Amino acid sequence: MRQSTAVDCLCPLSEPPAGITLLLETRVGRIEVDPDGVARTVRTSRGPITARRELILAAGAIVTPRLLLLSRIGPRGARNRPGP
Image (tube, rainbow, N blue to C red; front, top):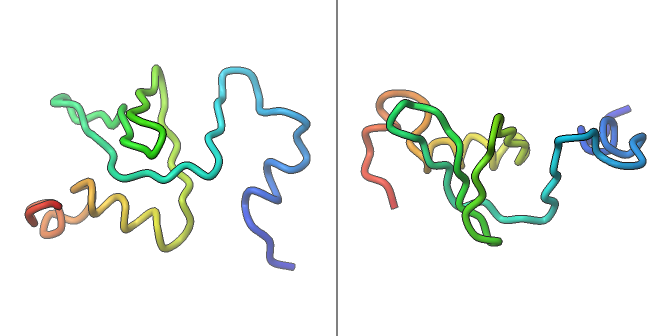
């Protein structure tokens, strides 16, 4: 049976594990990469969000690659294209 990752991994939990913040129904516009090459900040509909340790992006099979390309993360040809 097919089901979403959210249903499979998150529904059994009564609350997220300590140290993890879930932002559901938040539109992400872009991932910002620091000069040292680390992605820490995400521009969202709630404003910029900066991770202290890790940033986990789970936007689905279509939106995740699109977001990475819009953020110039990915194949060299895609990274060199002018952004929006």
